[in-house]
Image (cartoon, rainbow over all chains, first blue to last red; front, side):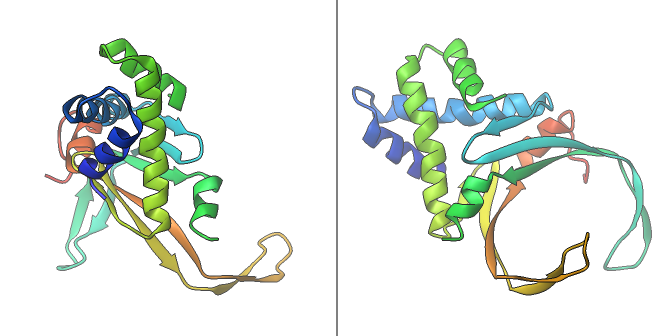
Length: 92
Length: 97
């Protein structure tokens, strides 16, 4: 499934909107989510899950290929925690 | 941000009618749940990918009591962040670059 498929699903349910307008609305959903997560705020979508930005301290790691010790820089990572509703939906 | 705050933010930033945004947001998440139920992969360019990972059954232990517990096989959704979003979260820099 891609964004284009989502546009089709939304288009089928919206009345009075062109394909282009529908695509703009769908685009705005992901852009708004990216803006929010870009500010490191979390997003909670009931029935789907939570997107949370977490801080990771710098740490020593190893290049798994060469075994060489390397410094892994500090960073922010995005985690997705699926809701119980979604987990149940996948295990019926 | 909750789903209703997401809808508010979109309505505030664009000239879309609220009702249409509500329908779109609900349809997007409902459709993604349906796709994952069919074990279909979801690819949103710049945002990330959702896949379903299957886990085999195993015997675990209740960490409190030490009793062994049979955990049946299960499917879990997995999200991998897209490059554009990963960079945005890291002040516009790819931390691995």
